[in-house]
Image 1 (spheres, helix red, strand yellow):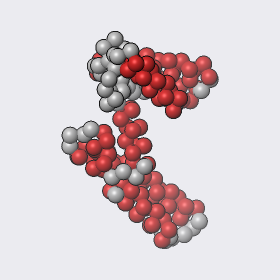
Image 2 (cartoon, rainbow, N blue to C red):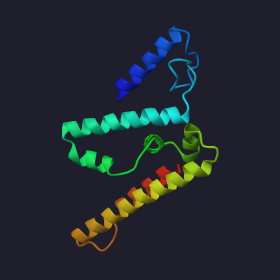
Image 3 (spheres, rainbow, N blue to C red):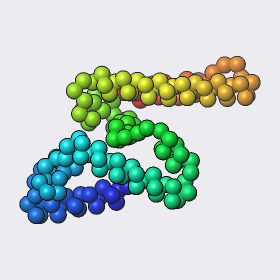
Amino acid sequence: MLNIYKEHLEKLKILEKKGVYNNPHFLFVSERTGLPITGKQYHSKFMKVKSAFLKALSKEGNIDDYSLLAENSWSTHIGRGVFTNFLLDLGLNPTQIAIARGDRDINSALAYVDEKTAIENMKVAINTIREAYDNRVSTIDTAYLEKWQEVNDKGHG
């Protein structure tokens, strides 16, 4: 994946040398004008990449991933979720995530962080209950409570 990004940056450098591109804040630009591409153009390019990706999965015989992705609706917004998860994994707090995502309102990022934190907490709780059941233990060990608190703190750090 990193190679694709590096190749893209090299392409932008070539456009810059040609005098077409001159703003480092633009990542997806028209090769003709050097201006940012429109949402419609971005969607069109994304759908081509998505199609090529699905074909590659199919060709590789990666049936499970292909089936999951081919049978479900997904589009450009998936990148926003991946980016947000990446920022959460880096330990950014909701305000920092909102800034990085360009949210106008922190509540957009906060809602996502709260949802992800709730899901992580449910996983910890379910695993704790399962382990307690399997081990015939009737109390929750302090280590599990600390693990839950760690997930909770990460989401609201």
